[in-house]
Amino acid sequence: MRLGFIGTGTIASAVVQGLAGRGHEIRISARSKVSSEVLEANIAEVQVAELQDILDHSDVVFLGLILQAAPAILAALTFRQDLRVVSFMAGADLDRVAGLVAPAHASAVMMPFPGIAQSGSAIMALGDEELLERIFAPQNSVFMLRDAGELEAYLCAQAVLSPVARMTSDASNWLAARVSDPAQGEAFLRQLISSSLAGSSAADLVEALNTPGGYNQRLRQHMEDAGMGADLAAGLNTLEG
Image 1 (tube, rainbow, N blue to C red):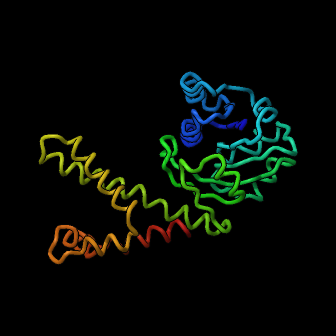
Image 2: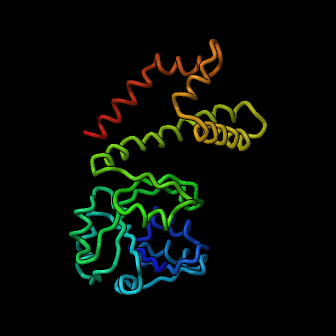
Image 3: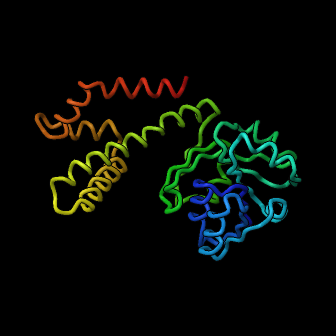
């Protein structure tokens, strides 16, 4: 497909990297300049182009702009009616995107993660499932949501990724002071956590690790007694509020 990207920040750049080598013709904007130059230099099918040129020569355009800046940038451009637009902009539902890109079709809102650069990533999305599956599956998993309310709830819940990463980092640092190869220790913990959760529901994994008196049970109970569950729920409620 002919794919265009307006905005090349961290997430948009990761998406471009994940699409490399899959037969697409990809045009990207010079925002951000450093990222766009690196992408163009390292991916054969990528070329940096002016914004209107991206719109004129793409079947699908992805918006990776900051929402506050988008109206002024997009108002200066002319959108074709047959152009399909997918937005990465947090805080903009399909109706908001449609108003910014008319008369083009606001096909989807999707929230990718940096891991999409290596494939195997989860993608939250609203809108045209067939289009997103065509572009991103089966290398990635597209989770289609019902409405903007569900998207907001998923956005809040996915924020658990950062504290999980922090806990893994803290455990790795603790381990590093006690072993000969700290890098191997962290790699072990990362693979242990990712593979265990990939192969089991969270509830089933907790139960499987609930051996009476075992290391996992004892640490989990210690953290629960310290308020881990209540603190997590309070944090999620704050994000939702």
